[in-house]
Length: 392
Ligand code: GLV
Ligand code: MN
Ligand code: MN
Image (cartoon, rainbow, N blue to C red):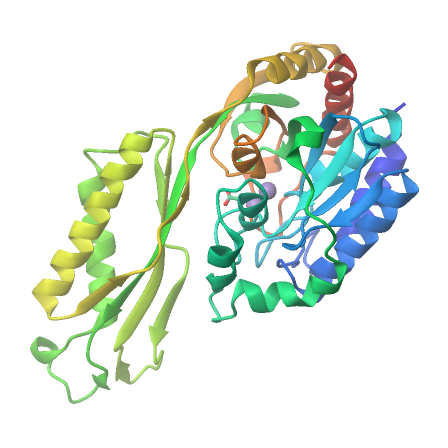
């Protein structure tokens, strides 16, 4: 039997690693001290649950059940630079609770789902989407390479974990959007996960004195970024749907001083949609616009590596098991819905059937310290997961 107190207590214990002090917030970036300490604690919990803990070279942590093929459950335990206590953590702790009560179930906490270095980096390497050498060359916003960061966990790495030992993967997650909360529902069964593209763009201009350089003589990298943003918002209008999203979330100006015309602006450009074709059309608009603006203003423009994941549909039979579980645990209080957030399940779908279920996010807030979910909904989520796994 699922033990709600044990499950919630573990979830609160995991939050202690990197607890931010603001609400229930968490700061647990991939490969930070807090992340590694949390993984060591999780490995201990896995062992107590009768699973064999195993780290791979990326720092993905598996809790392996027996030898025979069985289901894999889990998510990730790293966080955004400012994150909540449930994003990823819920799916890992729920997996552990289900593994305690259903024999043959294995557990995983993938590394760097939140993309300190790329996009869902740990599961991208495990699934074969990204090779280790290419992953190792990726850098975070401070210029640290993934190879340097993962060296902090090198002494833990065991043999690679063979995906053939798993028959399917199910990930419980918070919705991170407003739908379930607004509709007063308790469970969402995911139909598909959107695709994403992510690329760094750098404008190079002329660093100069902010008092003496006339406006018409400036080659100001920030002004180019501002013009780029306004222009793509306008040009996307004919291409996007109401579900398409795009974000400039990280900007660095050089040298970032009040009295200096910025000589360099580097920014992240990320866009997401359910259709590959639309993602590609947006890419063309982004590249053309960035180049046009650079040419008009006498600046250089450089594009970094394009990272991305394509949209994926969930497996029908795993989905049916989740739907049946949802109807048992929360009759009339669940629905199907797509995921606008990315998940490790996208990568794992390269290897085996995958499915996902959601519980509501209060106010639709996530990737923020005030992310939260009612405890009754968290418990309903783990119960649906257990029902589905028993059924399978
Ligand atoms: C993953 O957290 C995402 O960015 O959707
Ligand atoms: Mn997540
Ligand atoms: Mn996240």
